[in-house]
Image (cartoon, rainbow, N blue to C red; front, side):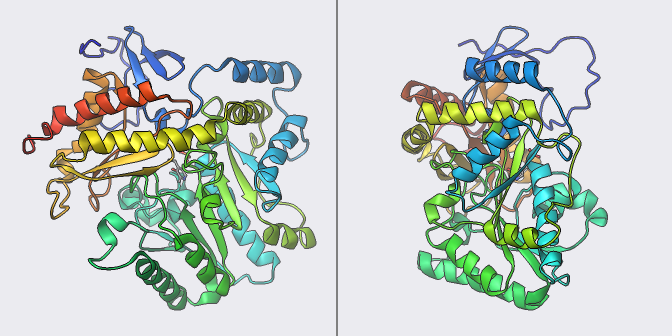
Length: 461
Ligand code: PMP
């Protein structure tokens, strides 16, 4: 592996980049688990972009399915028409829940799906005869997307900050389930769950329980808190509180869903079926922009007796080529047993990360499930004090990964909020093998040590 710096072309870019750390390398080819720059550097895609490219790049089956769909119908306006491929994808998703979420609305992204979900929840309340329900409860430091409605429910202070005056204020936020920082000394997991349930109950009481339309949680807190899976019993208790007050229980599985956590839907592991669910990233694996809102029986029942239609559409919803790509991605996942591989390789990845980085003085926590893992980096391991945000620890590690060690990592945490440590999130493809896990751990560790020093010494920064 060379350690040459990735250069970018001398031509000035007309793209308005959203990246915060370095000028993004120009990718001219993507194959399997690698991204190739125009200078020929092969970068290992250890985070699937942002937990997206779950079956790797350039899969021939998906290419073929997309091409066939282009030959058949490339586009028609979904409110006026349907297509066999939209029907097929929707049926696949419904069947994957054993019919417990019997209807599906396909969108173009995670944020759009969250937007649709919020509107669906509100429509349900109005058609049920409870128009006074117009509030949502979500969690602090959550991420549900960057469009205005999705940002409205997000508890991500830094992303909200400058847009705050434009947000509706209809969402309030409770504590996330985040044992690394929030579990008190001597507190048992059930007692922690009870404390969080009481906080949710108190929030319902503060708002007036009959004003709440729904509760929106990420099943796994993905990019903002860093791969924090729910503790046992947490989701069930949250849903109980929600149901007691007649609010919808909404799970955002844009990050955690479609196999990433080791079951197709992350909620399966807790046996807690949401009333509304979002999926996106792992649905289409990055071949086309796509997301889906999955609608539970309770909501379908009310709609069937009311307007019978969703009061929402977009020009590109249910896009045939996106549906074809997603359907084939899901067939590949099923045929190749990739959800099972997520579980197996996830355990191995966790083991290797702990063995390699567990003793590092700046590694506060290593956590994850399936193929979603995060390393929380702190200034002081004992006190868990984060690095100052301005030190940009995670972005610097991200840059080092790209420029020195040929690995694409996902930075997060302190860099955006300051309320927790810096995060390096790993979300490799579902078909990763042992050798590649070793490579990911080796390169990610080198990038971390390049910035923070090796496990045996104190921090360099
Ligand atoms: N919800 C969650 C839980 C997410 O992780 C994300 C993306 N990181 C979104 C919503 C927004 O998805 P998108 O970026 O596709 O709009």
